[in-house]
Image (cartoon, rainbow, N blue to C red):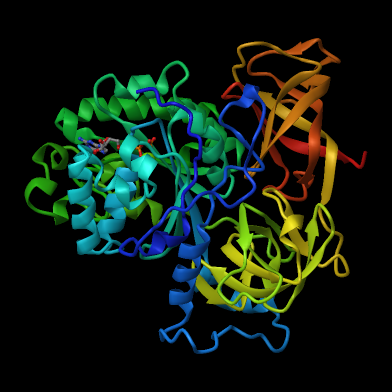
Length: 550
Ligand code: GTP
Ligand code: MG
């Protein structure tokens, strides 16, 4: 069903780890400013996931302060001498490694229900909270969304039954720790989905198998296709496809084979390696094949129709025991860890920020985001770009736990002291001190190599759009098309062409309205990627090949 653009796609993602506690949704605090009519609901300066200051403080204090004595001085983690973070990390690597997992797919595919049910089945949501979600969702006639409410926290999301912004949570499987990013599927919120996907290492693509529904997500301009291409363009290589709602169609093997076959061809055609794409039949609503294999559960949760055909061999996974095929958790547990660029200079692109923090005193600002590269420790000096302001890291939270240091790949909240909040913006980058290494550049002119998707109008010189870099969206123009070339051979097809056609690869010069922080792709996979959208449609994705200082 069409949904009107949201006035305020914001939610408090900070209280995700305590679903039982109150999760108040305060008005946006971050600098989300509406821009031109052209981009409608997009927000300049990011997607505005305001950590409601209040609930954030509560969550973080309770995570780090065991006693509840409000008069007692805060127990701040103090770092007296400098830690050799690279050495400490290599020692602790196994226990600390976290994978950032984004869950994507067409609107209503069942992403939030699937992950909400998974968190519940893993004991991450207490019974009382779950019963309350059931009662309250029933009351407003949205009973089927009870599990989705674990992740859809704002009142607007719940009353509309639509995820509007990324929700984060964390959980562990036998061999892996995950930061979960539940993305919105509705096309109005693709910018928010991009912001989440740009923090992801791996993904679950959820598709609705019921009659006609898979088709509406996959054919034409459905988001199954768009999301799969977007996350691949953002660097996600490993993917589990959850073929969902199979309960609706009697666990039909024929339908499962049809959908997995079509998706396999499509995904391997758009850059995924065949060994990196795996499929699993599930029902998020019924909780089938999520956390435990189907032969391990009884009653309604073990539908005979599924056990009869879903065998280990059919899944093509040599690690699985004979019997039923792997469940969703079995598959995500075997994602491989990407290499973390821990030794490079520290960079953190700001996803959100707010004044103060758990141990706030004086001029302090808390910033959240994922560390793109390098490491940071309490007591260290940082430099903020743009602007060049300096500050000192006062505390570090990694997945809501206070830590003395953090490394590339970690989702963190840093509290920075001696810095003015006016200096911050979404998309700004917190860097290692300028005294120690050269900070990132902020530019308005860059050269990128773009793959063009399926724009309604051909791209010509002067083509205006919105450029997405991680959580940041800025108006930008394709100033000049330098050349188109064959992606496979690298051979130039045409110099200075008049336009770029669908599916073509081109080198272009882009100019942005305001300075943006970027790295060359060869130096940083995270900070060297851009995405171009126009009129709510993704036009192109690409990598940065040159930066110009003016
Ligand atoms: P957006 O985030 O808005 O894109 O939607 P979503 O993909 O998160 O879907 P959501 O979890 O909100 O579920 C949408 C509807 O599908 C709800 O009514 C769910 O109860 C229903 N649903 C989800 N999974 C299943 C399933 O496995 N079986 C059945 N029968 N219904 C399901
Ligand atoms: Mg959802």
